[in-house]
Image (tube, rainbow over all chains, first blue to last red; front, side, top):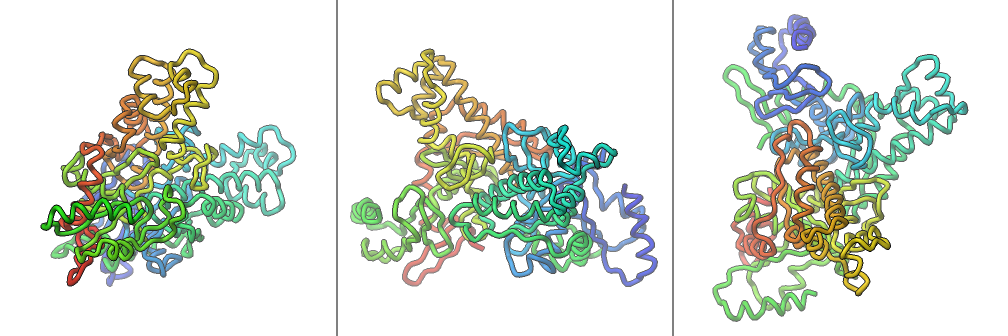
Length: 291
Length: 291
C-alpha cells in the first residue's frame, strides 16, 4: 500500500519542485507519532510507522504529516467548507465505513490516544446487527456501504413491487446510489428503507451530540451525495432526539465532497492548521491540533 | 432552591471565618458564565444566573464558582479518587438521573457550550423506551433510579418466584438497592435483571469510549454502590464492545462515593483545579478548566 501511495506522490514531486511538505490521510487510528493502527479495510496491517516507512521509498527530506482520513476531511470542512463559521462540530463520512471527527475549537479533537471521532461505532441498538468490529448495532453496521446493500437485499425479500428487486436479480449490488435513484423515481420500498437508515443515523448523531455538546453535524462521503432521501430523515430524527440545551442542532451536507480529504491532507502537510506530526530536518511544528 | 442552598451555606460561613470561596455543583447544563439551564429535576427552572441570585441572599463578596454536579464529582475523582493516575476518563454517576463528565487532560471537557458529558442521553436502542428528554432508548431511561424501579416491576409481572414480588406487593418501591440485595441473596430474577441493565450500561459506555477515545470509565453515584451485580456485567459488556484500539478499556467504581460532589465543589471553589467561574471583587480566576 505504501509503495502504491509513493508511486502517486513521486511524479508530483518531480513536476513541482516547490512542494513544501507531504500530508497523508489514512484509515485507522493515528497516534501522536503518526503510527497507523489496524486500518479496518487494509488486511494484515497492524501498527505501521508510516512516515518512517515512506521516507526511504520517496527518498525525500520533506516534512511528512500523517493523520486519520476522516480527520483531514473534517479539517478541510472546518477551514474551507461547511464548517467555516463554526468552532465546534461533528464530521461524519459515509462510505465503505462510517468515519468521523470531532472539531473542537477549530482543531481536530483527538481524545486520549488519537482515536476520537469514531461515530461509526456508536451503537444504536445494543442487541442489533453484528458489526465487523465485534460489537452490535453500530451505525456502520447499517449504513456502511456494504452493510447497507446487504440489509436492503434482506429487507426486499421476495417483494416484486420495488424496482430494486430486478436490479438485484440481475446481479447488481444494491449500492446506496442505486437505492437513492430508486427513491428519486418514486420507489416506495427505497424511500422507506432510506428513511429508516436516516432515522438510525440521526439517533447515532444525537447520542454523540448529547455526549459531546455539539450543535452541528456535517455529513460527507459518497453516500451523503447519493442520499437525499437519507439526509432529511436523519435531520428530523436528530432534532427529535437531542437534549433541550442543543435544540439548535443542525445537520449539513459537506461542501467539499470528495475533495475534502485531499484539501485537508494538504492543509495538514502545510502545517497551516492542526499539524501534529510534521517532522523533517530541522522542523518540529506543532500546530493547534496538538496541545 | 437557592434559599435552601443559602441556608446550608450561611452557618458554615459564620462558623468558619477563614472560608476562602464557595463552590457549587448543580444539575443541568452550566454555561461559561455559570448560568444553570433546565435542571431536569428542578421543576420550573429555566435559565438561572446562580451566582447573581445567590450573592445578595448570602450577602458575601467571596468568590462563587458554579459547575454541573457530575462535573464537580468527576473533578474530585480526577484529583483525589479513582482517576488520580489518569489524564483522560469518562465519569458516570448513577442516581435519579444518569449524569457524566469527560475528563480530558486532567480537566473537565465542556464541549461547545458547557454541556458535554451527558452519557445518560446516549441511546442504546433507537426504538427503545421513551426517556423524559423526548428521545428513546437513552441509558437513563433504563438505569435512572425511577426508570429502573418501573422496569423491574414491569418485568416481574406475576412471577411468584422472586422475593421482589412480595416487596412490591407490600407497596415498596423497587429501588436499585433492594434489587441488589435480592440478587445478593440469590434471587435469580434480580440477578438476571441487573445483568441486563449492566449489559446496556456497558453498551452506552462503549459507544462513548469509541467516539471519544476514552480508555477508562469511573462509575459513581448511589446505584453504583448498591450495584455489585450491575457493575461486573457492565464491565464485560464494555470490553466486548469497544474498538480494538481501546482493548485496554477498564471500568472502575468511584472511590470517593457520595463525597465526590462535595470534594469537587470545594476544589472548584478553591480555584485550585478547573475553576471556571470564580468571580469576586477584584478576582477573575480562570483555571485549567477553561481555555
